[in-house]
Image 1 (cartoon, rainbow over the protein chains, first blue to last red):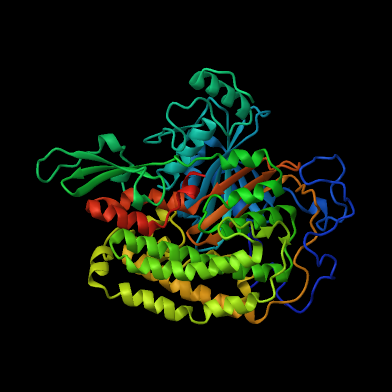
Image 2 (image 1 turned 120 degrees about the horizontal axis):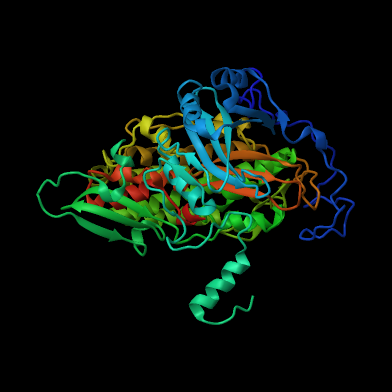
Length: 227
Length: 380
């Protein structure tokens, strides 16, 4: 896996192994002292970000990816692989929601990404398909990670991958609980962390904590909330 | 595996005695559920034929809170997830944000982080051992374990002033320099500690009651462990030799030599043996690390206001319970757009139903104990 994404093998560790060379003692004291003293940590002043930022900004952030792995996926699934990105050395494939189960099964069996670290979602309310369903996979054999993403809207259904990885059962329930995304083919889709009678989906960006609080106080305590 | 996916209420399995099935509710207030876990058990006599975990009693919406705080402000919150291993939580979060920023802590900071995190692993395993043994009926190990854990907590207290929710690390490095006697304190704890582990083992490993209560209980094969994405000691006890500290080294783990202990049968006894051996290995890492803590700064160059460039990162560390992952999405502002925490306890607990079926009610506490869950982390 020569030029593949993700963290490198132990031998080629990205860390500066030789303990001899020290960076110049610029910040020996607790908390470095950037030349922007008035910037309180909490405030958001427009241009108060410290100038001596070590990473050159264009280096970070997503960039298109086209390596062997992506080619194999594209060969196999064609248009269902919509985009391929690399961000912070981690590979991301944006795939068609309809073929999620096929792609997941292929990843597990053929590409050996047999361990599903995590399944979650991200809400982008301004987009037409507002949710990203994010699958973080890991391969023991290659010692690599790969991230699959599928876009979906609030009314569309996402095929459940819990038949591919049993672990997805609870994680899909959590995504349903927090985002209201419905997974097609899930055997027991119900709230997991919140009570069954809970209204709304807390991790959606338009879910306002304050509104929820005032409504709860009014309903349960019969008074107006002081918030 | 197929029966696992059948919903709880419609599961069909004949009852041996022809007696009616009993549904027993265990928790959320129960001393051996290690917090507020509620388990609904379906029983045939004393045999468990199905179970369902009801969680969320300790849900505080940590992921939502993160979206309303700056990167720096959110750091102390992660300590409240796995509150018996707060240092590991902090390490994972700080490193994830550092990765997002494209920076790295200086070597000295990383070495001190490694030492503290390994001490935390020992403390977490000690607390697990004490309570796990207590659940099964061995009262004595708890006192010994807490005695040694106290030493570690004292080191934390001397280092940063807090014992449990330490907030020991900062994004970019450390806030505090190691105190004067730090190496000596760590050495004083680590030197005799292998004898202590032997002592615990002499109480349990050959003990007929202990062996009877743990051998062959809650078996998880390697295939099942992978299917359920179990991690940490749980997957290693099933024979998968995988440790993120070796596979994708972070902090300063690439500088030190240590072994990855594994089990064969994936039962409660093997998980016990794996964790005992892990404590010994953690001790060795600490001893190697204090020999030469490199000089230099402890804080890297990160601004006071953190504004990671837009993008995302998934960073996982080997916490005492397993893979603790942070998936952070940045939109270029001072607050994270999304923080997803992949808690090892939650995912390991998911395999509980698989492990308990066919065992007795008394084994429920053994299996909850062997999974080493912390409900603060399960519910977040």
